[in-house]
Length: 620
Image (tube, rainbow, N blue to C red; front, side):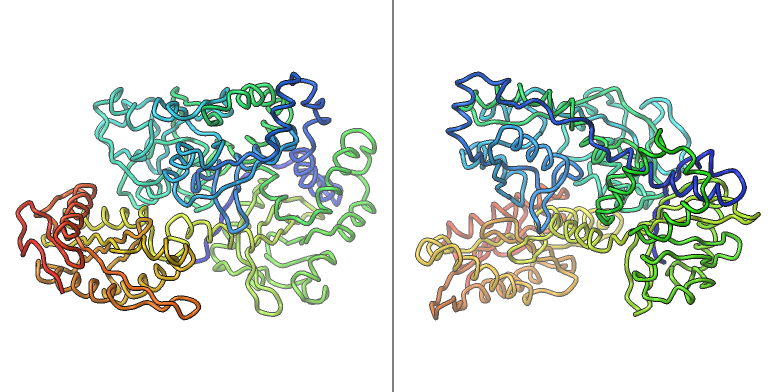
């Protein structure tokens, strides 16, 4: 079934009256809401140079390019796309660069720990807003707070309302494993039954599947995933008093930049930071912001909407009562617009932009059943139309079919009006196919290694914990292999990083060929790989795969330019439950076994030492 998202607004009062004037008022209300939300916050602030002293201005002149890093997967604050850094933090850094007349040069890292290590080692100068901790203060200075994280409890709609955390006693409550909030809850709420989840998105999936009763996390981030993943049955139930600040981190020897940023951030807050927070960090799980729609609308819509806002506010109030101007607006607007009869669910009018977009003549569009354009099952479509006709304004994300047969994801902002005794739905349609494709690619980037296209550490640990949960319900054994390449550093040093990348891609393919489709091969980073073998029921099964891995890794690799390279593999094996019943312990034991295989001569495998059910080491 095609998924859709529905967001509800109060219908404009003017849209409730009879006749075509109601249709005009409704249409203008749709556009004016867009215009007001995206109007500039005010004139540009005074030149920041006037706020800085001579020494600070000289410091900026000497540091025209400032390298910064950011969290690669912390939407909506910060995330990576093929186009670079995106999110509220990306917009903030760009704005600061404009104000200070410097270039904040983004240095991408696919792992947050790598970003922090880069800051600690001086490879980057600044880290975009994050929570200051004692550990991070050891190698970074911090500005004044930029955002404050608010936390809340998210539950399915079918769950009863709660007044405080005490009402969650005995319930299954999820909290992100790596969050500082988890540590605070464990100390302050010892009666809560906390279940650690690797990511907020995973926590929502488990709430939706009834594996958890609630998820506690940052309201803005959880709300973002509720919206983009269409968890329609999950809502914010309780806002917690706890808050945590996020601030920009700056290298220890750049106290001058901290002082400069502290002078600049208040002006950003006054003029644009509220817009950043509104567009990116809204608290409502399915809260609508016009920026989210206008980001995929044609540019002329913003100009037209802003002009209409001015007219509505005071220049020409009579516009709402003008049938001629209503028709002019509908016919000449560059946005795709349809009018649909709510009772018959058929198109009653389409503007020229709709004719161009859908590829049908206007005469064919008029009278066309809406189900011919919309891929939703007819019963689902009927429910949506009825809900919208009941004096509500809504936003839908659905899939529309064009005349040429192509399917496009669209965002429909629609509102009802009574015209001639009929309820007509006036809709503005925006094509968001590319945006959703980018979001899907972002989801993949968060779970897969970009070089080898293997699962990354995050996805591997998720699958390992899923397998552990399954084994908690069923009997049986499985194996975890930890693989490290012997001699890889020498290839990098001798032939360069491009050659090293070529070797890693080749060996990744070979490792995949060593296992079944039900197994998982992941790259943890560098030249380290892990294999999860759910069907390896004996030590001999695990050893057989380890020998395949060793043989595959030892074969010569042809590099670019006719060069060749050869490495070997050391493999550590841990078996469940003999070598651990928890994910971190199993991985640690396999890692230790791998180092023992290296110490015993490399190019071999070794079992974890505790209760080892097989030979300690073997080679080929």
